[in-house]
Image (cartoon, rainbow, N blue to C red; front, side, top):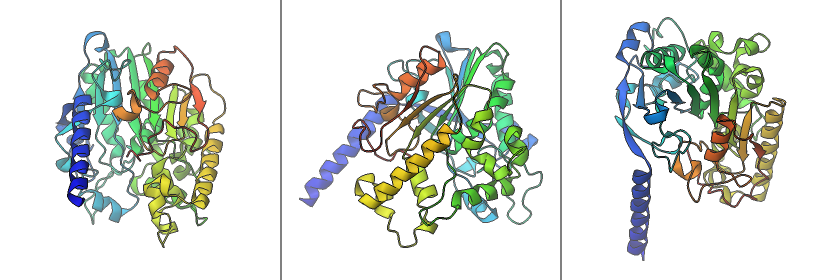
Length: 392
């Protein structure tokens, strides 16, 4: 029986890999060596990197830029640890990644953006591309230069043709999505005045709320990130002029002042936020939330009630932005994190839908102004199209 179960499991994994390969296409890495002289380097001093799939046909002057995610480091110790991973060193990054979902080059899988120039900027600074400390840490030899990386790669793209952009989107996943919000207006300012420029946040609407033990864990953490990386000067001045810099890492305090059109894709039960903002290990020393965080189907009724309260806080933060005719949002009730870069959640026959609409259709309609989309899903578990497979 055990052998048979193992064979079924391996067959399922093999089938999944075949599907992923057929839906995605490989794109090689580019190291931006010229950035090193500008001090635009990863935490370990290695050059920044990106994956660039050139546009074709009618999309040659259209640019989609996705900022990779991967949380943050908040002090010398955690940032030094990141230098031993791909999140702190381009030396440790894989040489090829698969583009799928919103990065796909196939009209079937990505009808509105398939022929654009599509780029994934790798994340190796730990500050959502906001840090800029002149000197490396004398003890750890760690560099805090995320903002310089953003500037250097943008200069490179402008030289490669983005200066002639007709359409452009700055997007991201998770910490990269937060970066897309923070840099949104700055990005628009780099492009021709006549270009249609918008920003897309996928799982980047991190909220300032308390943990299950009543502590302000994420607020303190963000304050430490900003202080460690010297990020304050690179955060939107519309926020830092009225709030402490650490609070300007929360989109609820920033997005209202952004002038460039912004679309928010987020799960109301964002799995990363449930794990790290609502119930981080420090607030759950006995691990009572461990199984629930791994699989929402294993949550107790009390835990689900706490998660419903989190959803209410999330929607309160979203609503605090006020009305906007140019802002779009797709807030579903899936237990997920980052949904645009995975074909299964972006656009497929079995993809999640909200008001009968896939994420791909909603984003495309909003960008091209075919139809306004501002929808919030009913509470879990009402949306039966959700996979709740904890995409991260």
